[in-house]
Image: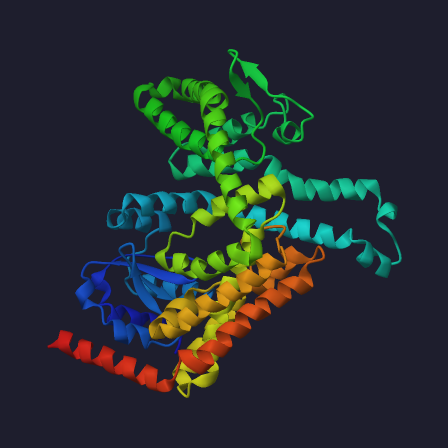
Amino acid sequence: MENREIAKAVIEAIGGAGNIRSTAHCATRLRLMVNDESLINKEKVESIDKVKGAFFNSGQYQIIFGTGTVNKIYDEITKLGGNESSKIEIKDEAVESRNWFQQMLRTFGDVFVPIIPVLVATGLFMGLRGLLTQPQVLAVLGTTPEAINPNFLLYTQILTDTAFAFLPALIAWSTFKVFGGSPVIGIVLGLMLVNPVLPNAYAIADGSAAPLIIAGFIPIVGYQGTVLPAFIAGVLGAKFEKSLRKVIPDTLDLLVTPVLTLLVMSLLSLMIIGPIFHSMETVVLNATEWILDLPFGLAGLIIGFSHQLIVVTGIHHIFNFLEVQLLANTGANPFNAIITCAIAAQGGATLAVAVKTNSSKLKALAFPSALSAFLGITEPAIFGVNLRYVKPFIMGLIGGAAGGFTASLMSLAGTGMSITVIPGTLLYLNGQLIQYVLANLVSIGVAFVLTYMFGYSDKLREEKLGVLNFWMNKLKK
């Protein structure tokens, strides 16, 4: 089917253009707010060409098309009468359907998503730097680490250290933007937290510097690599700025509002927010590192099994905070290695369904969904295939646990974040590539074998379709 025909079929299946209140999309999903959920023919939606799954989440009806395709379908739907809306607007409409915990986690996601690309780039630079400075690699090129030009190494350090050195500025900028403040004020406030005149946080950590003590008991330090102080400062700063603009006359706004916002928030951030939340952050990081350091691969077993369960709930955005913290404070990300195995395992389970089924439509859905999972995006595999038949999803969880266990035993840790499975190999070029491939193969292999042997049969598919048809007929009557 052509994209325009698919768009027409979607509109018809969800009850017509009049039932669409707003339309938006993310990287893989078309997100619709509808007026009447009962008008949606869910079975018909899932039978449309290129649809890889559909479900309700946070008040939105989300249809999975995959990267690239979703943009084209979205464009056609808006041309045909679907009410175009920004992602921010459609999120606002869905807020009423979320509890406070979901809203908090979604906010974390909104703040961190815009800065992830630079953290991904930094992680890739770290991996390439590790590869190019390995003695074994240099020996193949006929040189040694000592022969590398010092200026070149300095340049590579600029590539790998800048984003994390100024991380509070990135976080404060994004937080101000999300909460309706002026992003440029957020940037400056964040830069104040890492101003070179302050004792460097890394220098304090290694004992080569000491914090400034104000009022005899308040430690003042730079907040390089921290997350919570900048996030809290950003939230309060944006709200404070907005409240000022309500009371300050327009003629004085340009002068007074930025001055008061930066003055008040810099004092609060350095003397109250920073010390308190940096201490909390340290406790959280230490607890996480303790879990990741559990012996006998227990961390990988637990996280590898549970990660995709958490992804299904939609609260996995909190992991961004964790990974940023691990990288900023330790320079390594063992969490990435474990969740990569969880993602790869869902792909392995989907691949088993694709190989075993005799349904041409299911094959056409499962093969690309498995590929999507191997590229790090599991929504098509989970919602389009594995959760439909339940058992493949469970076998994927077991495969994730097996792979995570293997990764933990080998102490795998990435140099960056946000890319996994095949693209994620770039984070393990510092001598860990073979182990990384092995852990992923364990995940995929266990999930594939279990799903093929015990997790799926065409009889199961036919039984499920029969149940769906039964209830659809009941609803129509």
